[in-house]
Image 1 (cartoon, protein in one colour):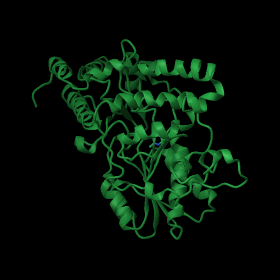
Image 2 (tube, rainbow, N blue to C red):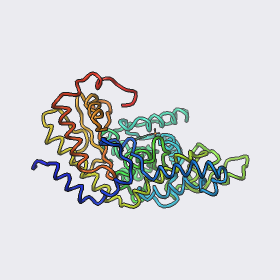
Image 3 (spheres, protein in one colour):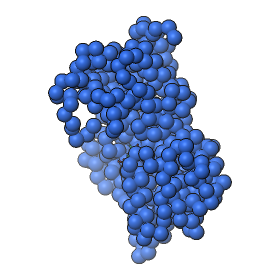
Image 4 (cartoon, rainbow, N blue to C red):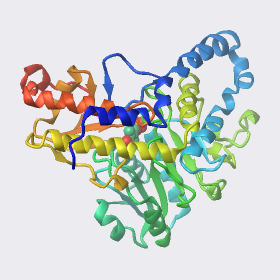
Length: 413
Ligand SMILES: *Cc1c(COP(=O)(O)O)cnc(C)c1O
């Protein structure tokens, strides 16, 4: 392959149809931010929105805002917007709670749909919280369920006629590998089981077609590629055919058929609102809409195309410019099988990531020995990729990672 240079990257930025989106976000000075897969950047509109929610809706209108500002319907109204990015119909997604709590609700609801079955299939190498939550649920259900761990290659044979629920993350948090959602959901259904998909690293990164795949339930974050803000509430999707059939177990008043009837006994709402449990964090929830609006003005096919180009450029440049540095590609080399992040393994990965951060190139580290870089097509450009690799070349050439301060571990890696 011909050597790539910075002018090539500038040319690609100049013809990038998504280039205009960058100006809708706050990007800190002298920073190349390649961690939007962990915490997305601030949409400029979120500043105005936060001020309005604080000063007008809370400060002035107070309790009236539940009706007047539409606070009561925020989980479904913003959920419908998010649904458009993941192939859900209106009325199938609510924004609420954390991803982990939504995993709990979705898996518990799914188990009720196949009451005679006892096996839950999980990917052992998944981001741990999903599996921890299911382990807690199984323990709570009196150990009558069995967890069957399988890695990617073992999934097909693990999904058999004993399985109740298959709970998988489409894009692997560490490697960025994409599972074939359509095929795995088909297999799950052929075995008579129910699918729960985690879209934490998919939503806003690639095209997802939940209904096209006939997915049953899905969950995910809004603070990663969707730029909802630190700790912003997650989302949960329940296919319409399951509404009124599967009940999630955190049966709080927000999921009640008539919350303001204040009746003694719980009765589930027959819509996706049943997935709600209690009063929503309005400040944080309201801001989720700002990032979504930037996405909704684009089409996910363009976002995905640019994401594949950015990750491929990064891989090509690291391999061309640091061939002897000891980096091994952990992510799939085929961009069709890769999400929007790239991981390389290196024995000194932790210190290298810290040295890059000191230079303003922000990626992150994941055990064992993975340097992980996320590429957010709405605000990362091709020159960002070039410049990040230029810093990496210098960190390696000057052995900056040897410095003592880069070898001390912080609480958050
Ligand atoms: C980021 C991530 C989470 C985060 O869960 P929280 O409950 O929001 O802390 C969960 N699962 C996966 C697969 C993730 O990537």
